[in-house]
Length: 487
Image 1 (cartoon, one colour):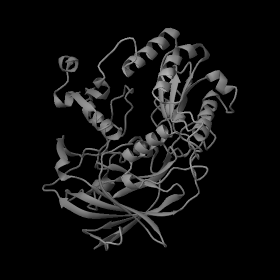
Image 2 (image 1 turned 60 degrees about the vertical axis):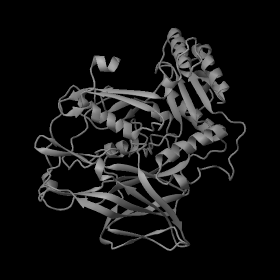
Image 3 (image 1 turned 45 degrees about the horizontal axis):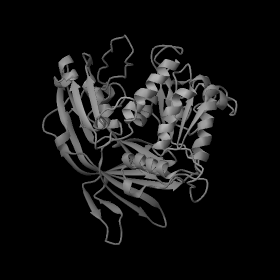
Image 4 (image 1 turned 120 degrees about the vertical axis):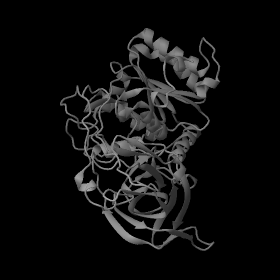
């Protein structure tokens, strides 16, 4: 895939009979061959699933080519520049920094676009519609490497990379950092990182792009998604809503991958609960409640699944069961009933740290293995599952997976009862408005890491419904403390 960048300062709309865009005054064309720079960049890009984007969108198709055009605006009144020691820290809501260590820490936004399931992105054109050169001189804070939260090692400061800070060339070279695609519940999604800045380290000038145009040029592609034969209407609406919250072109979402023209709505299963044989009676009240709410729900034991499906281990057999129900029953929700001793988790490779072996931060218990059903999660056939690049993980969830972490019958009864209370049907009746209230609190993790900043990133990356009320108590904002949190 090629990324073609343009610097443009005028946008004209073609005649009323067309909905395509043409960029005028393009110069300094740049090209970038598709690459995957690092696993941490790729995975962090994928974990940024829902960002608020102010978008103007149009889609144009013609006989010679297919294109999708969007415009992404970055309000300058939301831009924040704060002193951080001898440096300037640049912040922009809905954006995050995933550059290489030592590079300027310029905020980037994940932008996702729905494309037809039998298409891929051949190349991307990007242009700057409007920009502002910020007043002053800036020494942008250098990006620091990620540090696992469970690490007891103090982070070592990484100084500015002289190969970047020592020359007065524009950074970054391209507005679009990289572009990838994946399938979310059968919908083909193309994602990209947009850096709305131009920084010249020697002269210390910083330009902010307030509006950027992006044109995706599509090409035919072999279908790689797991095709779905049927879905209930409630699952179909759920999948459509998830995609609409994610993509920029929500008014022109392409249909998902199916094995035939029309998706059936009968003989479906919306939700499954997977648990140990000794726990089925304890989760049945939850299954009954799901059915009453209109979700077709089944309970399956680990033993019944492993006896009916193939796989190299129990985890792969469970995943193959889920793939079968996803494709042939329209499955959408999965409850893993029990801790990892009851329903085992896949231990997956996370990123490169200082340790070796499965008892270090390189490896994490990962239920996402049961959510992302595309591929095998071990394409290279080695002992490391979930290597994003080597195993071709697209990191888009096809199923919504949760876990009730019990490992005794008493814990199972308690957790199910508390879940039903939360739903408003347990033995204790509670007000129902709390279900749309979200409370977030954070402390300072260390002298250079603000828990509030981390929560800001979580908030920008998670699909929090717009009708939720969010209350925040952060050390950073001087609103935390025992009294404030309890009250």
